[in-house]
Image (cartoon, rainbow, N blue to C red):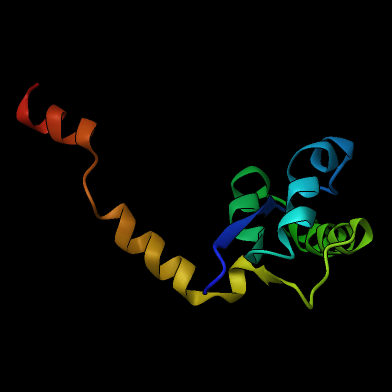
Length: 111
């Protein structure tokens, strides 16, 4: 029997805080044992808020990764991955952006 797969993560805009622990981090710890879990360090998404300071995003990648380890995320049971090092994310995003949205379709049809 295969384990359910989870893909989740955080934008690397700064270190995680107690709110992260009270919310998603506690669940991620619980899911390590019975799910195949992938935690994404979303550095490309963090650039939307920090385009003028990409060095901050790079620094925060390490901060968030260390915070994951500090709360008990086990890299033997959970895969931690860096968004900018996964070309498939950029490729998928480009393909996805080429699909017209429903609202855009209505606007083009005059409705």
